[in-house]
Image (tube, rainbow, N blue to C red; front, side):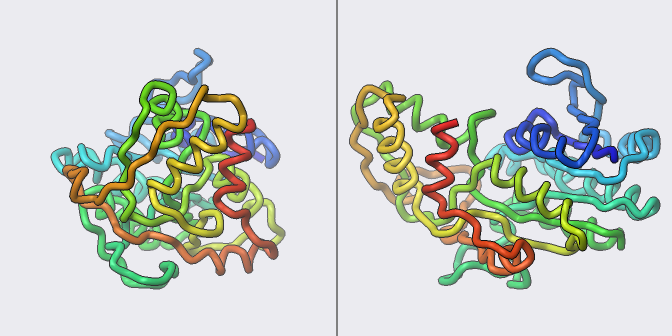
Length: 295
């Protein structure tokens, strides 16, 4: 079996290169045609969506997994066309190419499709209402995939981090080693999600006898704020000797840290539907953090 993976250089893509090998041969694509270790791979430019269908036809995979995305949330507010090309138009092209060949298509979406005004974890069928361009572009990508009419798996996730790429955990570890005090937003709530968990669950779902189709929420269990996440990162890092001391983490309001794009205030996702399909409980978010820091 051949799996065609788009976005092999990203946080999730890096982990998928590892996990998807359990299913067969993995053909990796990046925009540059090169992996971090210098190895060559297929070229896939999501800024030119019209070129992507030919790659699917040439590789003729059994499964297509798309981990490529425009994720610069603030920059997207002033870069609307690029965000929509990568997050909406390109996934639509891929989904239609897969539908024509009856190839299952896996795609990742985000908690940013919701406005964060809820008071309970968001379910897959809750009304969407993105606050900015990034969320709107990801929602448009979801809609394009569903409209293609093929077999698809849309996995919405949130607060992604890991050992690779740029993310909140790595920023906190760097700043924690440099500063005596950090100020972190405490009134945005969600669930930190390891890239490795996303990759492992994706592979598990694809390996099921009756692989599911549709939209699922994928995060660990539980919730915290960015402030709570920062404190946990530094506590766990200190216990492992990764930093010499833990700085004081001061809670601040979103209004004290203005950004170009609005963020959802509450973006915990309900993972009950996914756990039912898997037949098991997903780990608590802090367990995931320990695993990432210990890897």
